[in-house]
Image: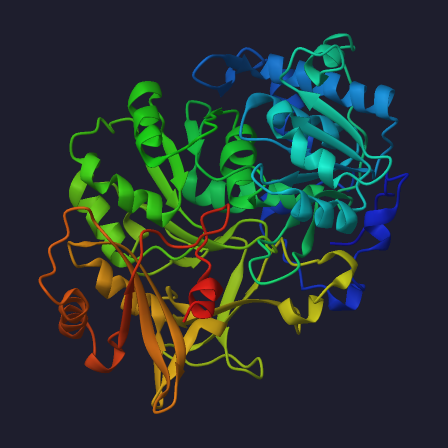
Length: 537
């Protein structure tokens, strides 16, 4: 897609810090729904459009204590935009850090920033001052909006001159009070479709995080591919999701997808598995999204739960074990939609829904994307052979300042760092992260396959598998296991599980070392931190 609209950014930081054009992936816009206008503000498309069409009285955001309509969200977002412009002096292109749990004012702030032509930098609410300091420095942010309960760490991290709007307390300068004094109308800045509207940080589980850069058109593209073709939302849907909005999986499921369709979202600040189930029963959730570990934790309660409203459940963030898929399906009949996405690609690009789902397989390329399995030289391998996953579509990796761009984009393909196998029907089956493939005595062993075997044992609640050094075999398979409270494994629990794994998969794959733990180390988004397990070996 050629740039034919002039950038609206007065602050040109993001455009100046895009990676060199030659290092970008190839972008694909073959679907008619991906033909966006050159001038585009994604906030106006997601929000204003419904009010202008006469649907402002539809419910938009629900919590346990309040309901906002599209009219109300638009009014408050417009007032936030005015507050940023009038009180902080925001000009298009300024980066604004957002910090808070999933609640209506965080959503209004996200829309307000983007409507004003700013760049939203949403962060996990549990990050500490050192992490926030790094993100502020990388993003060059001089403004922030923060839930009043999370201001302390932000204040400690704040560079000189950072302006902070807190919301949710009783002070006169609280954003909600200042916004209430502002006009309810705000004309969204006429940004270009390829102006950056958000920076999303990678998890940073193994080092300094990277900032990924996403355009206005990218935000709409994830709704017009995965959501449109697999979730197929209608205005009658009510979404709910556990990931924070700073996690692009959560942004899609809780903001972009429901609002692209004129639907509603239920926001929960502490979305534990029991509370998610309660929300389904109490509010009639129709589309639920959470991580595999949460679905597995729900299994004992699914049989007695009232789930008639649910028509779609989405799993992402890490691979969905076949054993977990089957346990959920056996308990309540729900067919979980698995998917692989990434912060760099913004959302899911391989998945399957309904009767197209094949348990244990991630799925096929989402309409609008193409994917293949390649060897180390970038050549496609034959179906059935292991290789690295390579993807192209309407979204793709652009690291701020080109930071490590060449590690993710090669010859126009986004290289996700995952090892996959594709079958003759175009279904992709996850094997491991490229750096998590275990080579032991000459055998290639995929850790997730061993994890799935362990999870089939009724005493195992969670399992993680890594490779650790071994003088004789080069590496051996090590499993860290969290047991259920009622676990019964006999006098030699490790041997019991080892023998069980040998009965499920090829014996050479069994974990030669097993460690029992109370919990597994995870990031704020729920991703397993395998490097910490290796460090503890």
